[in-house]
Image 1: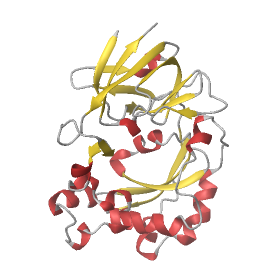
Image 2 (image 1 turned 135 degrees about the horizontal axis):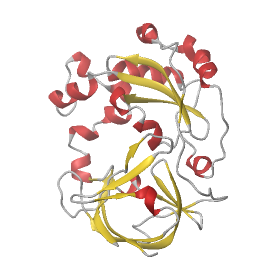
Image 3 (image 1 turned 45 degrees about the vertical axis):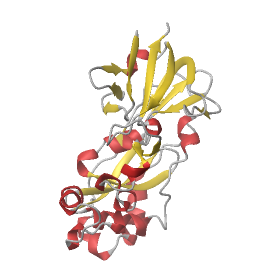
Image 4 (image 1 turned 90 degrees about the horizontal axis):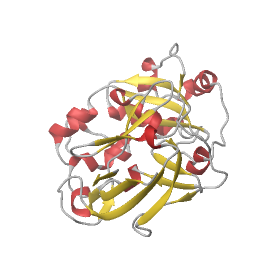
Length: 265
């Protein structure tokens, strides 16, 4: 069976084991069903997720021109503390920024490789944690806008990491930790503006990923350098496909790449 289309990050469902779906324009693949099968990935061309043109992808599935201009790629997306919609100040498109920034946001702790702090819209829980490959996560505060979440993250990352060690995550070199205790340690560092939003009683979320075998060492597949790959799929974690030879393919990192995926056997 052969599928083709432009890559976007896999859609997910949290159940006993995370379910993954690769969605095309007119079709989709339930990726869990391909685990244990040999598949091939063939890179055909680029296609910007915004303008649809065949232009080299710069970041986030976008060509340089779109990344530099559309509101979905504003600086506040990566740096929430730079959000200004609550001040009625425009970055690129105030109407869009108000819709995105002026809604409930969560500051959380997630354990993917080590404990890290992060920010996401409330509507993206638990999707954000799954995408990061976290096997456990817990909310710290729920605030009414992105700015408050951003300044809280900035304050807390002086005391806990804000990045995931993706190699440790993919080799499953991780420990189970008491995130309730880790959260309580950080309470004293929450900024005054966000302290009333502290969540003291919510429970830790545990996430199980569909992986038959974790690699001892990981090597990444970059389709721009190696446009064809074939291997036995052994699992999925975060937004990575994990193959039997230790190759890991970051689907999200290849958004905007048009590919052909073939189930070999």
